[in-house]
Image (cartoon, rainbow, N blue to C red; front, side, top):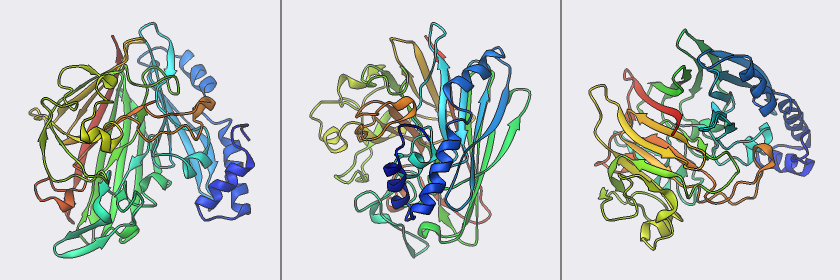
Length: 408
């Protein structure tokens, strides 16, 4: 078992899941299996060294076992330049390996090297979020006059699908390997009533990496029996200098949004759609994330930094929007985001507090990473002026987001 995962932590994990010591042992065994799984730096480096840029490959390895006996696997896929590792636990992006402007490769996403930490400690690192990404006020909403209650897990509000969201489920996985891209299609069927949501929802989320360093995420969902609400996203955390290396204050952000949705003290949108002009929320011109993060703007005080939904600019003829571009000037890595979604939550890692260690025994502290979650707006079911998130039987939910990795 890794030195950074003592038995007391395994027992804490078991307690968080409502398990006893025997089940904790099962988690501990899973952690030991993860120590030799694909996705470790040495295994990934060896995989990349055998092939050049543009050659697509994928491998599956065990990552651990849940207390109820479900195997969790890690899929590592590469184009010879960028390498992605993903878990069947939560359809989670565990690692993103990219080179800097000098060709030096590092992992730029936050995560863990063992299953127990994902189960008990993870603030959604790299996870696929559902049924409803972001917050629902007091966990309540209604459809066609019928009221529903989601378990609250963020103060008095429901966050990212309630207490046991899609991030804590083991997804079915199928390899996708074509001449132009490689990756994994993940599927999860959420029964009617799970976490209080109506209807049986079948979700398929496909992650593919192509030869041009684009990580594409295609979301697809249908519901049976009753209408429901759906807002799927991914919660990958990035630090383009390398995970656990420093704060992201010097990262430069260009964000294609003229408006954003202000929030109340519980980070629930007030319903207002406000202009960013003249505020610290205006990133239409490339600006360092840390340049204004400590301003006394009331919204920055509420969020302890940026934790807000931005209303993205107009889509092109294919329905795709340029959403944002992040650049870390010291190493030159960039990530550019395009999406079909109308909004995106920009989160500056305000609630990372250094109390747990990530990959490589690195503590993640406040401001050590950013997340950029493409989405429909938070609490949309309770704001008629927001884009609707209702999905009805016979309809299909579709959404696409692409992260393009590069240097300059």
